[in-house]
Each structure stands twice: as C-alpha cells, then as structure tokens.
Image (cartoon, rainbow, N blue to C red):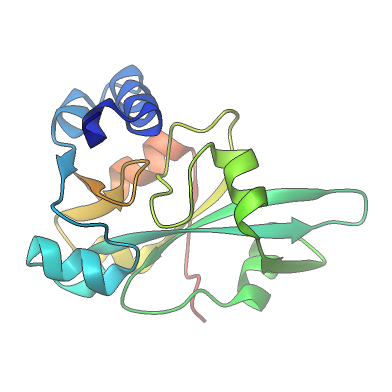
Length: 166
C-alpha cells in the first residue's frame, strides 16, 4: 500500500476536498522517509523550519471535562502550554499521550494533520505562520505533507489565530 492509499491520508484528502481545497488535496506529497519533526520536514522540503505547521495535540483540562486541543504551531518555536490554557479558558493544558492523540484524530503522532479527524477538534493556529506564503502541514501519515496557507489553515480547521508561543 502506498502512503497515498493510507486510510488517514485518504481522510485528509477527502476533508480538504470537502472544504473546497482541491488544490491542497491534490498537492499531498509523499516523502521518501518519515518526517516526525519540523526540522526533518523542512529539510526534506527545502524550506525554512518556521514554514512547517507542527500539529501538536494537547489535553485541555476544564473544570467539567478534558478535550483535545490542536495547536498548529510554527516549527520555528514551541507552543507555551500556559498561553494555550489562557487562550481557550482551560484550567491547564497538558501533553497528550499517543493513545489520546489517535483516539481524537485517528492519526499517529508525527503525522497528525490539521483535518480529517473523527470529530472537530478545538484548534489554535499560530500567527507566526502568516510570515510564510506557503505553509506545509502533515497529511495524516509521517511521510505525507501538503502545502497550504495560514488563512486556509484557519478556514479549513475553524481554528482561532493566536500567538501560541508567548
């Protein structure tokens, strides 16, 4: 099975197409090796690390529930969990384990895409990504990426633009 046939990649392509982003769905690129970090993805694509949208899934803890929080963070810096908590009104934001990530996204860490999840996920989109004409995001598998823009990430995810690193 090629990576394009991978079920998670197919869901991402379908979600992008359904959102009217046929060019992004058609632009899914399968890389020769897995790229589980922004630095690896940037090197494979020949772009700046900051142009990589890291899909970081956290556990947002509220008084009455815990929900997944997806931070689409520029590869140039790290998301600040205190800032993330303040942005969404959570008591705390914690690192999610691989089982939590897979349960809520249907995808494995290292290949989590901004879309294609079983249900909508609370999403923040790093405003630092605005600095790049083209932003690269994972497409559901650690070997797959697709080109997009900051504005499209906000639109397709229903995410909130935010400075996630301060």
